[in-house]
Amino acid sequence: MSKEREIKQVLKEWIAKKSKDCDIESILDDTLILEKRIITSVQIMDLILYLESLTSKPVNINQVQPGIFSSIDSIYTAFFAEAG
Amino acid sequence: MAKLQQIAAKLSAASLKRLSNPYTEFEWPEALDLDKWQFSPDLISLYGTDVYNSLDQGQQKRLAFWEAVNFFSINIHGEKALIQGLADRLYKKWPAEISGYLHHFLDEENKHMTIFGTYCERYGHKVYPDKKLSIPAEYSAGEEDFLFFAKVVIFEELVDRYNSQMGRDDRLDELARHINEYHHNDESRHLAFGREISRNLFEEYSAHWNAQTLARVRGYLTDYMAATWKEYYNPDVYRDAGLDDAYELYESALVSPVCKSHRDTISANCIQFFIDNRILLEAPDL
Image (cartoon, rainbow over all chains, first blue to last red):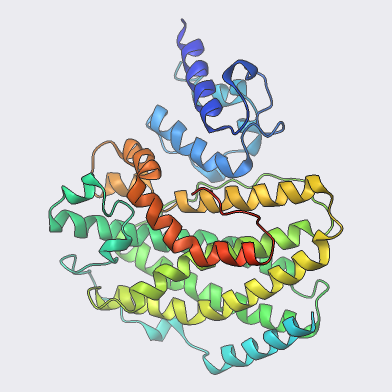
């Protein structure tokens, strides 16, 4: 499994765990996780802490646009693509 | 609304009576005595867990200091959002008494932030960053105003339970105790107003909301309460206190029975208010 696949899988597992009614198979790379309410806006804080723990870098909330949390693809691009 | 107007007028009079100057109210020593508690030990986020029990008292007091910086940081971010929301609602559509009280509310929240900010910057050399992100949404009539004031109630009820206890806790360093006492004295008015206006707005608008909107509102408040609690378990605090595996500590505290029991106890009055007013139908799983 490529590093990118691996990271996206880890993110899907986390989101499926936090979601109230969504299983991991239904989360695709481009699934709109906020728009479809798979996770809610108030869970973004939890996601940010999780991303910080994965990347070991703080996330500056003032420098991020809500759009980067819209899908697995956008999260990967914003937080992991450069390092990957 | 008539009762709300009366309450707003009374609260304005009480605020005028208690007008204070945060710049002269407190004496700020050059450095804190970290041999003294800066935060009530039983309110420390990890209190009662195996990790907490394994720390010596010096380590517990160091953790208490960073918990104080985090608590005051939570207050700063909560009050920033509050000030923005209150300012947006000045002279919007309310009777004059309500806008009049919103001015006091704004004034007092601004003063609180200067106090919290001074403590954090002077002794912690930072304010812990906010991790909450606001995402634009579409609302039904009255929903946004109701959610704003309901969130004020949740934020302030939790904060005030801490302030109320720490303001009376003789174990605390005098500065930390005084800050909590000062905040509690203002928050009791803000809470009375927040509860009354939330109840009014819910009564006025919820009758016109469809089942989907009602479910969304209830779901949002439940999630918001859980998210608010998570701010009290800050991995950055654990790192600054020298504890290992900060994120794992955060995750384990969220599922620890002793921590959950603490959250349930502190939240009980707040949840009861929402249930008594049929705003929530059941207690959130925190």
